[in-house]
Length: 444
Image (cartoon, rainbow, N blue to C red; front, side):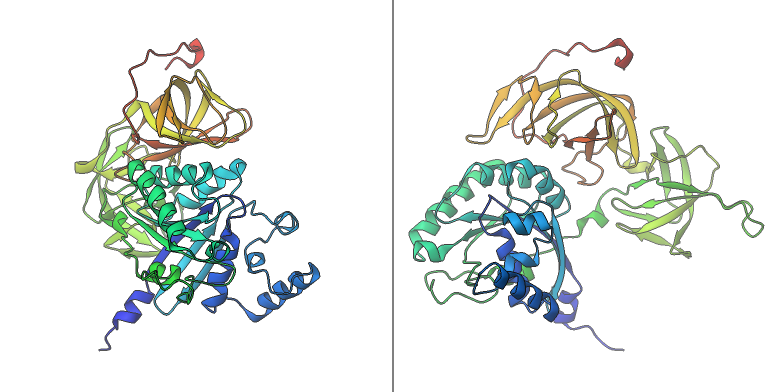
């Protein structure tokens, strides 16, 4: 029997990471350099970039064009949408999300970082830590991204001076630590010329740490969702009612966390009914166990009422259901979120009516102070909210499960996503507040 080498085992691991930073800090150039220098760019792609760069009067290829795919992005020289890219090295596979730097596109950074295990935050060495840097660090902390890389870019424009890098790294690390970021790795780079991106820099012999790619290849990847409490949001009830399977009734969905096994006692939430797993179908074949993020169909011992939006959980690890949700949120819509706002709350596959009962505080990014009782959250604001739902929700704490501890608020009139929320997350305990008045029709 053949054995798997350490290199082959490492190559099977997948790292999801996102880039973030202010406008013109060089995110797209960094990603382009990473793809180019790691030999992950096809010849025809590189030729297209060279032609486009020549048409713009540039002597060298503009590697940012490898990720800025929209015409508006190329014309303006900025990133607007999240650009997802897949690449691989002999040591690891990667999915990266190149997110925009403009304040009005912070919502895209939330999207890109929501599934990331590492975030690369770029800083222009000439400008240092700015408000958008702090905002991205706060979002990474809120989303509990376990690893943060501070890439101090454009070191070539400050003559590769170590004191410039040291000052920025110290300021950012202190700020991120106060936010609760568990790990910060600072790397001085020049994405334009390739210093410390894939190859070590010859201009910064004072730096003895890893390059960006070396760190990405070696940072520990913890797929700990398989060891969390098992959760299956029901997406679809399968009843073929065919002659071959006259009594088949299965409950399909993607396992959000943990592992399910045949014979497990499970509880259906929010109803609280209990039953037992009698079978698990994976890709049309019966299996004894399945785990996140597999999409499966569970067969149950009892014929009970289960529909889309219900949550299947182990009976011994069932979360409490509640109609009162308190969370930290990032408001992503141009329309403000206000006390008394009627919304739809989407949690997993379940969507319920809800009302914003209170906004206890808004985070001030400059000094991490809390502005009490602002009454309103505007676009890109981070704050605490108290929400009352029309029906009970089985929500985990975000600290326990990023998948089942998160939700979004939706405008019921047009379906616009308003806010991304993390149940129970908090920078500091807000002061007690009185409930806000609400319309009787939404008095839950």
